[in-house]
Length: 46
Image (cartoon, rainbow, N blue to C red; front, side):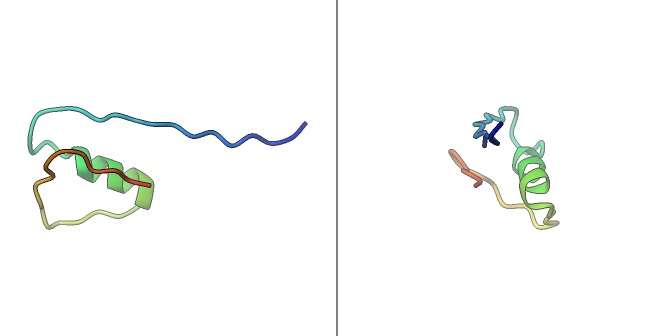
């Protein structure tokens, strides 16, 4: 059997300033920033 690559699109929603961007960055890039910047609109992470 051949291997298959999967591509998932995840939509993270919630109230302002609860850590949505931090959660996605921690999972996808294994990094955490102590400096908070407000994310306006969408923030695609590859």
